[in-house]
Each structure stands twice: as structure tokens, then as C-alpha cells.
Image 1 (tube, rainbow, N blue to C red):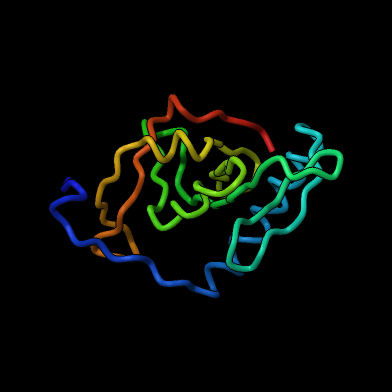
Image 2: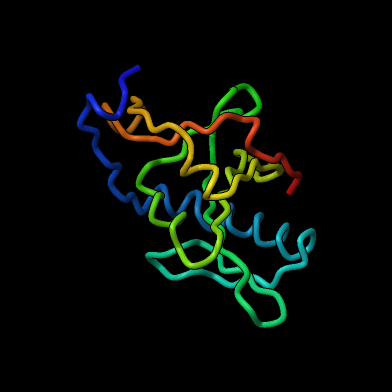
Length: 146
């Protein structure tokens, strides 16, 4: 495992096929959860911005970024968040990331400030030889049923 300072990592290119397969169903599952369990009004975010914008009584209270994961998140001690998502965690309101399981029945969520405080490491994945990720200990995530 190499540290960020010693590696020149790549950034995963956008894939319309992966987006179509994963984005809307994961956002829909989180949307229902936020509305029902957290009693938030939820709107679709900007095409190039965060996935969801949450408000209460007409005032924006935060943002949500959603990722579908195809591996079993319960098996791991950390959850990796792509470094390219950093821009979403430095906005004018708190952003929460939801890592949704394959069948959209549960998720782990963490706040952007926790993610930003986590170490950044270069990792190999099925799309790239090296990509930067925040490595966030599972202890900083909350597990919810969707």
C-alpha cells in the first residue's frame, strides 16, 4: 500500500453505463429514507453537483452524495471514498455520503468533515491501476436500513 505522497494516481473517467445502472436506484432508496426517517424535503441536485439537496421548512439544511457499492460493506473495517468527491465535502452546508449496498436495502453514512479528516491512500481497483481514496474507518459510519 503506497501513500499519496509517493504515487501519481489517476481519476476514474465517467461511465454513462455505470451511472445508468447505479445512480438513480441508489438515490431513490436514500431519498425515501431521508424523507421518511429524517423528515427532510429532498430534491435532485445539479447534474454536476451533489446528488440530493435536503431542506426543512424551505431552508436548505444539507447535501447528500450517494454511491452504490457492489461488495459487502459489512466485511470491511474501512470504507473507501473516492478522493475526486472531495469537492462535495467543502460546500456551504454539510454533505453526507451514503454508501448503499447492492440491493438497496441498507447503507452506511458519514459526514463530509469526517471523510476529509481521514487518511488518503492510493488504491488499485477494477477500473484503474491507482486511484486516490479517503480511507474512513467503519467506526465513523452509521449503518441504516433503507
